Length: 458
Image (cartoon, rainbow, N blue to C red):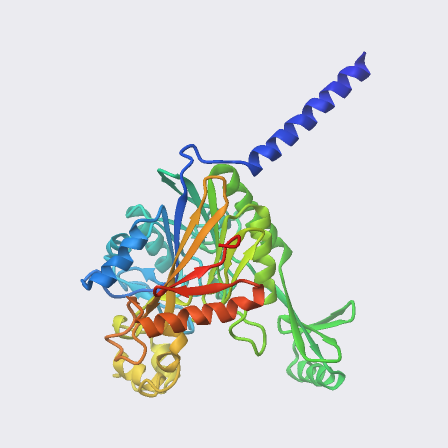
């Protein structure tokens, strides 16, 4: 009798598990309506863009406002320049006045990532001020927090077509800007949610011997295990060709996937985001190996959309198991050249400028009067506003690319804000997406000034 009861109980448990699995697979929103998501790349944002009234521009803004969820990576801190800058942030120091939250809401963004390499430009005080400004303005944000648990936790918005979650992290972070875990004996550390990775370089025997000599000469700490020689944060192995292999740090992968799984159980749709500058050696327009690994794992764990940003240029689009992955969307706003009035001493020292130098002096010197760096890189100033339509049962229905330009070739005060691309520029941008997406077997068509990603034969 006891055995038969036990068998029946086990059957009941099995049926519950099957039922839960099927329920998760066929989960639909209560409205049964499609959900509309807009994605943009980096917003390194310091000036007002609500001042422009060109009809085509306002039509672009309407596309963002009409979405259920509108996302951007906020690559700037919001604070009144009362905090001290960190010793060297690299790539400039990004901050904006408190009115930036009004601009964010004017555009229509309601989900922002705060995990990026500029999150700690002004230390604890700068990041804390920025998060407080976003929260006071009721702008949902994910990716940074008072400790690792807060930084890694999903952000949620409730819309008429369902609840949407965002989990955000960054592989491109300053060491001092990583959020720290809370313990029973010590508090956690404010910072951003990391997704770190290990790198193993394959080199020839002579190169490895030279590296060992260098490490010994400099007195660097080294290690050797499983045929790998490691020092200075990387591992090396002898092989027939030079190459690099990257893999996500297991603890960070597990922690971020746990947050995505949590979001999946608490919301109808999940967006996973990462700020990642890294590229494979010799292939700056392709995602690193570890990034593809993480993107696939995020989709497997329940993310409906995956978006990467950070490399300052476009990358390809992949449709993985029916879910879209965007490996790089370049910039949506990039106006810091004329929008940052003060810089710390380290910036001027890097260009050997005198103590009375101004930000204009620094911009002239660092770009050699707009002939090197970002000003002369066309890809920095071209992107797209991406419109995604998902059905209530999580099927990918449509992806539309709305090409934008940020003023390539113009004077620094005239470039940096998004404008709908001209017909010729729009065609070139979509063709670039199409070329980069071939690597993943994704087809992109150009029609009527926009790009259309092939989805289920459409």
